[in-house]
Image 1: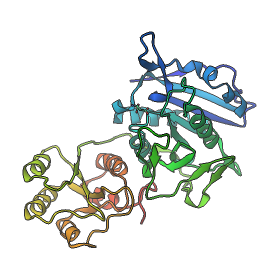
Image 2: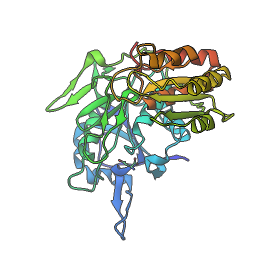
Image 3: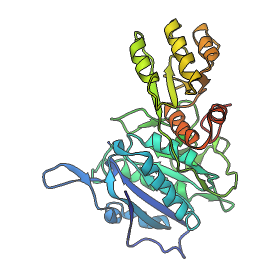
Image 4: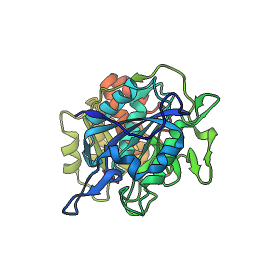
Length: 354
Ligand code: ASP
């Protein structure tokens, strides 16, 4: 798994440009074209200016990298996230912002992961993609890319306006670790039910400055060790003890994300509470995240969540499953169980409301 640099001709030089932006093309619908048989295949990214001549008029200098083999984002893995983080680190000083072109299916996972992996980030990392390939006359790819580039380049008093990992899609800029893919047919593919948009793009780009996370101005530090010994268990009426135990009895398991109902509620069956007590006693971290896209887990609000709390289940508050999962991957690889239990309930990268 590698990246290659792509020469894109006809754009501004680094000396005369108002900002320098690195584009990293990973694949997805955005860059698909038709082969001779009509099937969708990734296009040659060096022809981007041909598909999007207006990119020349932005006054920006570009460095373009591409995955050597562009992928459908369903194939993304923690190894790819590591590669993305390393490309950003290696090119950090020479660029004002970064745009990652990514398939929409797992974009919220990648954005969440990067938000925890890029500690001390003070420059924009904007993920975008498209619901229709750029070669399609009705494609959303052009607007998504042009505005993502504008946001990645945007500065005020010589500092980045949006120094965080975000998703820009369909005229809205969302915090990456608050986002979810919610739509596969319409253009408004993403939503962040528990956090306001960081910007809306209309005639001008209207930034919601109060909602944007301020850079801590630390050095960029990478956390590229990830541990995916995690299960996501979605509760449903009728879920059986055998199924729950088959997950909990896995000896390599280090954490479980329990997707509960409403404000963090679960059935009060004694077998479930006992199974939770036992798995937690074994050192497995269990985090309660709601199946609702909006609102938050409040353990103890209803009797149906009080026992979870007493069993040692941690509250995921208003975290998305994508954020909880990638946060746990980073924590498990870097801290012991007691530290993980403490940090998982803390706000590390704007992913939960305290
Ligand atoms: N399956 C595609 C992907 O996630 C869908 C898209 O790009 O929108 O790579």
